[in-house]
Amino acid sequence: MTPAKQPALQVVASEEDNATRRLHLLMRQRETLRPIFRATWDDLAHHFEPAELEAWAGAVLTLAHVNAGPACLIAYWDASKQGAGPAEIAPLLAAAQTAADICRHAGAKAATAALKALPVACRTLGHGPALSRWWRVIDQMSRQAPESIELTATRMSDILAPGTIDAFENFVAAGLRAAAGDKARRVAFFSLQDELARRMIVRDLGSVGFLETEAELKAFVTSLARRAEQLKRQHIDPAIDNMLKITGDGRKAALDMRLVDPFAQTGDTKVARAIENIHRAWAAGKERRLTQLVFCDLSTP
Image (cartoon, rainbow, N blue to C red; front, top):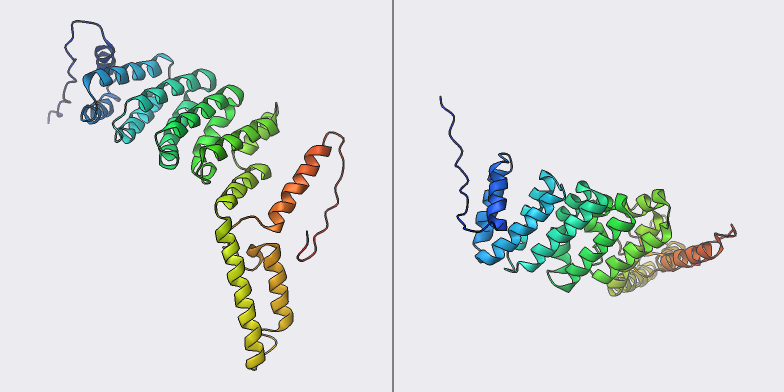
């Protein structure tokens, strides 16, 4: 049997040597990329005018000229199709330009990872100024911590969990500042293996959900009062419940709700504040190698 022939990619007729024509000519030479490119081009043609498509073609060529590689081009095309909904070409052009800069400073894999993380950033931050700030931070990282781009990008859902661009900027700034010239420490921080990194995310989540955490504690205290009333009115086996156990649970909850409920919110608790104070004291004395002694009673760290 004769194998089915692949449809030929048509060259856009043009008197002048524009980006659209050059890109289509380039894709005619890339058989593995051609079908993916064609599908992307047809999809974008439903959203953008010819002049906008010309600008987009120029953006793709920019990536090709920095040797971003097939994986990076495909990641950009996928991001373009997902970002075409708002019908604005500017964010897609900015994404390509920044990805090209990242490729120059941190390599093609880093640029590809950043583009794959873009949909997460869009869902969390939208397509406005916050997204532009997100790209600026990623670009800054490519210059100051190029080895950390992929680590950050693959964990973007966790890092952006607090939901604000301010939290993301503070997180990256803290990682660059804390690690300074220590590459291993940067890797640990941006891979979320570092305690400070995890604590920053938890803290920012806690600042958003503080009212929920407070409500959980109040509800638990109310349940303790009901348990105490039941002890007075009913004959309950002390092995099942007693006043000592009730007061002990109350002291645990005051310290951190997770001591009585592993699925509780991680908000502004005594433990969280103690951790911040301990770390602050450590940072102030680390150059002189000072030592701390931390005592933690059941409800008073």
